[in-house]
Image (cartoon, rainbow, N blue to C red):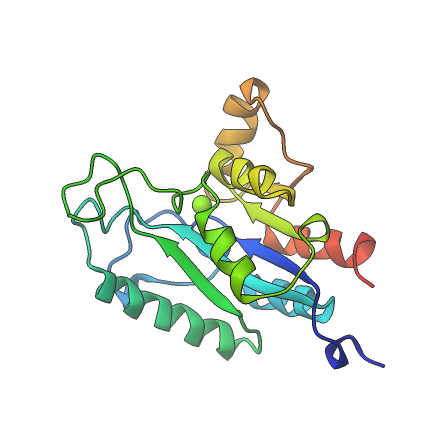
Length: 199
Ligand SMILES: [Mg+2]
């Protein structure tokens, strides 16, 4: 029996910017401005082979800040999925938070549980998919990703891509919670999970 013959009972939550794609360009408002890291397709294929659902959970406060609209973001995400599928990989669902308290665009300029480290996006996934949190993961490049994962009861991996190197060397010593693992990049995280947590 192959892994794919059974429904996955585990999930991996992935941050977007600095995790599956570069974070160098700020708030991405055009599909042409979006690209994946060169290893993202391989990493997602490895994780899928281990029988995980794959979700993107991303804070997109650019909507509340007035930098782009939900429709523009949807076009960027359509391009993201096109690139991922072009690599022979796939994502089960994309969840984003448009909120930011001091933003200028209503109704998004509020505190909201959907904004990581709040776990509103996790709860949305939980309502739609059946999986075991304690065997699931959050992978990201910022404290908010690690706190999101811990708040949701997931295992966590901090990456050194995106903002991760700065977080690890300058900020993490002071964090009240720590990631379970720190890994160079998403491909390293995929190999870690494949080697020790695959079945
Ligand atoms: Mg990030």
